[in-house]
Length: 317
Image 1 (cartoon, rainbow, N blue to C red):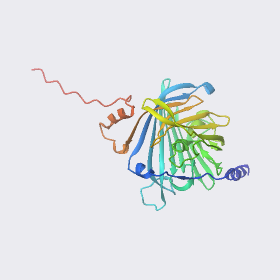
Image 2 (image 1 turned 90 degrees about the vertical axis):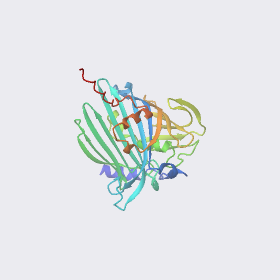
Image 3 (image 1 turned 180 degrees about the horizontal axis):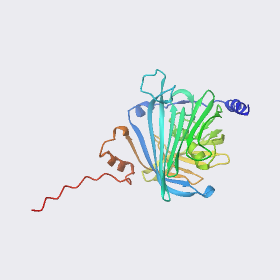
């Protein structure tokens, strides 16, 4: 009964958000069959509560358009008849914690045909792997609610499948990199701010050891660019801030010129990232021996690369 009341209240918490619509020239750039790969130097706080230890690592943001099928909410093979275009963001992070490392990937899918509100993905999922165990979680908006499912190695979590509220004007944290870049509309407009219901990312909730819960956040887009230098070079960038009530404030510095890449982000909780390199590649085709060398273009060549075997020594007479 209480859950039903919460769902009903959440669904009508405020005015609906504007529709997610692509800006002029979007498909000329994003419809070329390639993905944008942006690599970052990452500082990821982990372990230690409010004073979590900063961990050095790497982040890779992959942006690419795909066709989704509504029935299954997965990439379509074109045979279903219910397809629509989405922008996929894969947020991949790797960092070390003492003897063992973390591999984290969050996938977010934002509908591009104007049928959904800005800031609301049609699906988002998270997987976390480390030496103790692994976790998978998913948020799926359907029928005015968020279906939150998950599977975890850890006691007290196990398997769950629950319905969460979905405010009409609610924004999911996973959509923020897309919103900040203006890839689904100029919202909020330059020099303005909005305060909306806000659901932190699944990763933020995971690392805080909390179930996903709605709060409020103020999103502001700056009007004037500022000069910023990062390993990838110097950029004129506009600041987009997301201030969570009772939580952290995240500052995105977004390239003022197209394609409006995220040059840097920093959170008041200690998370930071700076752009190292950016490439447009059909990376799914680069799966042959020797393609590992392309990692150097992204500044990710700390991974061991294959070495050609040495020629055998001639036999001694």
